[in-house]
Length: 334
Image (cartoon, rainbow, N blue to C red; front, side, top):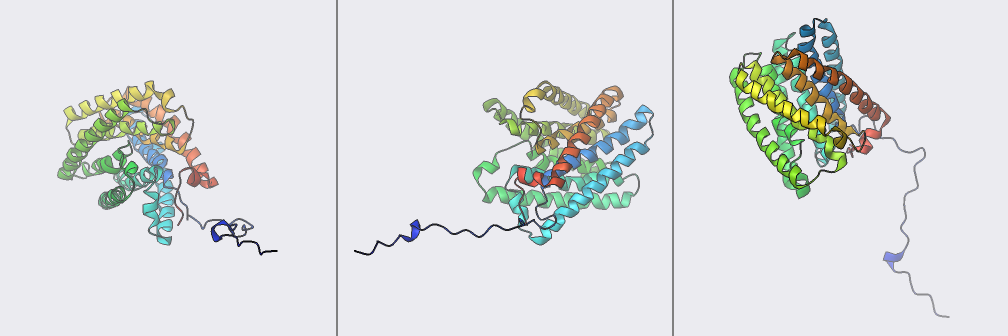
């Protein structure tokens, strides 16, 4: 009887490593999800909004400062966690930049440093100025890393999204500290440059929205379009450019009403980490209204922010603590 023909090498069954028991757990912060930062950015913005709104309402300002302190502490904890992740494997940064939640989250994280500068401004102007320049430098470095990631990655990643406001217009947050610190020229340059970039992103995004309906899970990102108009208006107010401030605030009001009208369509896919995009624009809207003396309208926006921001932050932090946030947002592991 002839010998059986040998089994071709490519047809032999593959061998797999034995499953680990108990399952391997990642090291502490090894898969820290950047998607936690947009909700934390909203908490910082809520603290700033309370700082402006509570005096107008005759309420104790200490409440706002307590919220601000808690938000800064949470942001510091999350920033420490991501720093630990980076020290384990620095190249993990570019892996997180490959996915939309990672890109948006990292930009929100670096912008938190500038918001922390605004939070500390009344107490330690010198430290606030140092954090301002550190935040501008960090965000510029992140923007360069993002541009490199776009240039070397797939073409699909280069499509303009509302998150581009975070990447390239987010520098406007620096104006919230630069103007009160007397760095008028710096604030004017930031206002002018970021204003032009914001107009470009709004224009491209409007054309995209007309041509193609965004997928339901990505629709919450549309709320980010509100933030630049509010922040540009706030910085213009701090610089005494009241005409520009009112015009930009009117634009913000139009965007806000459009978002409210489309709220059911935007949220049709249910809660997701993308809902962090609702938090910081709403807080920025309240602050911009208070800066223009529109206390009644500002209070309405502040009440909405008080309902939305803590609820979204709680669910995002709970998902992070439970380990599901990293998996749902494809966070890289160091």
